[in-house]
Length: 301
Image 1 (cartoon, helix red, strand yellow):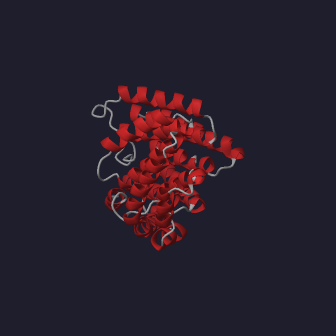
Image 2 (image 1 turned 120 degrees about the horizontal axis):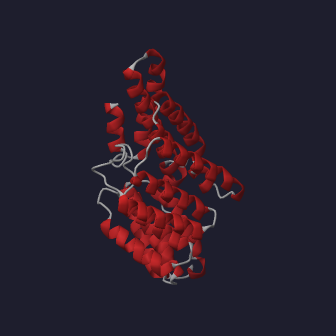
Image 3 (image 1 turned 90 degrees about the vertical axis):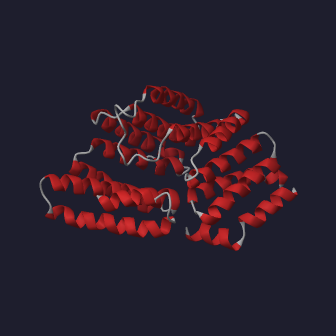
């Protein structure tokens, strides 16, 4: 468990490919040890295996663009959470499993993603989840609905999450230590993305600018994502020069800290700049986007 906790902290610091090898091997070691352990120690070990497998799945899905591999890790994480009888970990895993169908671009998988979210909420209720976890589940479901085009439903979920956060008392009812990927700032980031997809460029820009001002310095991966979303908002406001500036800032971050999810967002914004292909700012952006370093990273993760 102590190694698992160390990996959790290293997620924000180490290159994904380097950390993934260690996390995946550690999770597999735990799996092999589980049948040999009994009593209270087994519950601790099972929780560690579940958390490690969840982290491996997060790395595979968000950082390394290996969604098929991530689903195997999530299944293992769910099985280990069952061994530990940890309903909140199970809820977190199920919510993560909703991302694959949501990000697939396949509208026929909408019900699959929604079913995962219903399961995640059922586990969370039985596990006595606090207001912060409720807000996170709202935010994940909002992303699912945004991906499938229902931004009205998504914004309703975001508003519900904001209300839940106002009720949250972190001292009286703290979140699990492993839920270190969410905060009011991250919720605002979800909101900015949904506003942008909904075509509300000015509101998205104002929200994302505030998010970037408030974001901790060590939240490097999320900063690149929010810069890409801010660039998309600039496109909605017909400001291609500003969009290119934000994308170049995001590429500066990815040059030092690769994050596949951010690169996906950057490429989507670049597609939306096609009508301005002849502008110097767009041509300069392409020189950065298609240089050796970026191309190799985007192809090998």
